[in-house]
Length: 167
View: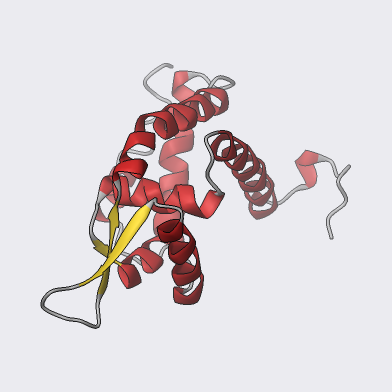
């Protein structure tokens, strides 16, 4: 257990990222609860708003959650009218997840809530600092990710130039 009064300068990068992630996650939960969603439901809806009709197992992989957790959450979401699950016409083993009109009606409000959170997070940074932070986090994500990161990693090549633009 970490001492909550620990000097921030003594934290490792991993510890600091963990603390920041928990704080951001807490704020995100508050924003989503404000519009009637639990955190996992919000993440599923955001993914489906980007790509509707995705296979349930692919959705679990994309969100880095276990298939049983995905099934339980989707069952509750289906019961509450957020999503609809259907067997694939060509492969009955595959269950595809679709948004309902109820979920579609919430999209703009949810996006606005997360834009507010993003504005809060970036308000303490200069434009240059935001660019450096985004490039750095994408680089770390790419390194740690099990999936291919062609697009974010391609940005790494110019990462040494970020920050020089305002000097």
